[in-house]
Image (cartoon, rainbow, N blue to C red; front, side):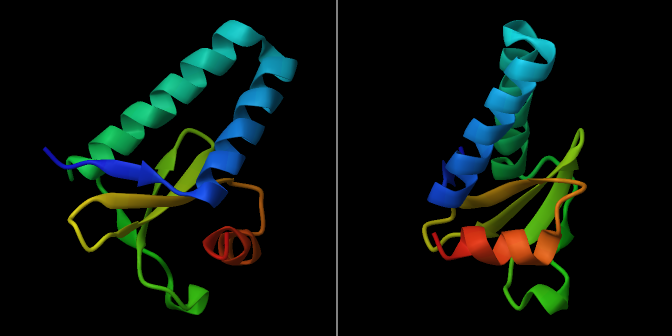
Length: 104
């Protein structure tokens, strides 16, 4: 069974997503969205979800996929696990935010 690890930048983004969703649509919706996001991480780790390579202009190797209104960025780790680097809303400036979270 393959696993994933949520890295610091991704953890902070997930907290932001939860808080925003709770404030906007309520606790039940926030829990549902975050639960679905973690199920998406599981699918990525199991390699059962389609993904694409991160565009070359990002300057890093890794992959991304879409979950609802967010993009999930990850990389393969040396032990075979998946490192969830960040989760960004589709309206965010992807390259700039990705680089910020990669440095965390």
